[in-house]
Length: 241
Length: 241
DNA sequence: CCAAATACGATTGCATGCAGTCAGCGGCGA
DNA sequence: TCGCCGCTGACTGCATGCAATCGTATTTGG
Image (cartoon, rainbow over all chains, first blue to last red; front, side, top):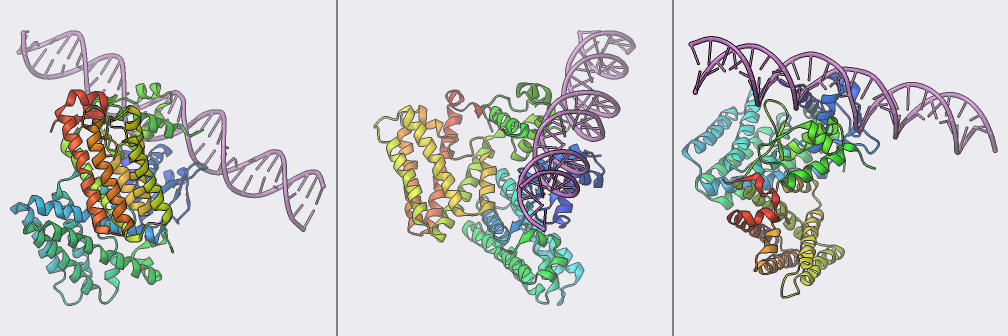
């Protein structure tokens, strides 16, 4: 069994990312403590961590409030992810993939192929793709073997919609979602190809370009705000600008 | 007056970065609370933050222990800083510097020129250079106008010896320290020049190259460990590997 | 009727009590 | 003498009490 503070942290972060609290909303300790069945102490601990992650903000008058995110902020965070994952891809390419690493990534590609095999995207196919996508990005960072880089990417991914799979739900609704998944999937394939051939600059450039689809998804989410709200409830944390 | 928790956090971080605690050392709440004249509660809060920053580690048996850093870890963190500051320089170049921005950076260059004017580096000259160096790097990030990027750099800089001025003390002891400061200073000048001319790729490449001197300093610090210990006491947090 | 001041309720920041747990040490048995 | 086991002391994790503060609503004076 784990500690209260880690349980509260995970659950509270989950609530936040599910859009449970509105932007700017005051996050009172007592109701949250009651809701998560803990005392105020672990909740306070969790707040301290969440403030580091940038999800909540300490109010000058005491206590914490839910942060509001601007569109630019998220867009910028995705750009940062691009640069960091680009660095990861370059490092992996330069250091060289072992056979096992290459195989593990190739397995991701295969799973993606399967998920996208059907001419029309199914729910299961979409879910499989999301899982594969997460794995691919995780492995990329892991294989780069740079703790500071991992940390930076992890922190960045805590922001809503900054992580690799955070904007994928946009593709599950639109009719042409499968087309975009095919494109991003092919980018994965190209990144692996570049890394296999130790083409560091190419791998880096591809990884940076890869996040442009996420930025596009974010734009789409804004344009069709009411639809997106169902798929990605945390969209309400984003202010228009 | 500020809160206990922020005061404790700052002071405790300071103690850690001054090398007050040895790597792996258990950080007991009570002695630290007494030393900082606070109760255990704010100390615990500070620990939670310091764990996020990667300076301390929660022990599986409860409590926190001082982290040990490997040489590779710090070297990697400096490389990450290079990539992030490279991104900042590129963004500034691409977005264009306003007159005021350019002036502010040019002022840094001027201050550096003055600090290094004397044929032999004085203590004051060195101190002035450090301050200027901090300012230059801060402005670079600020002008990039990307909150996620700022956050990532800030987090990274929390690691010992990862920040821009953290390895500069190496130049204060050696006889040829002034030469190296002249070289880094000229890199600053080149970065500003590139940004002024909107040469994004050049600015980025220069910023990335700029951190190589920091990595060199880190190597030197290892080679002359006993000398370095006086200048940079936190060196004891680094394990050999 | 409006504005300002005051009082009250809620909430935070911090201190501390309490129980559970872990580590270290001494004793006992082989 | 060495190893294992039990005990004790200390420390953590969590809950809660208390004082200070902030926001709000009501009341009072102009």
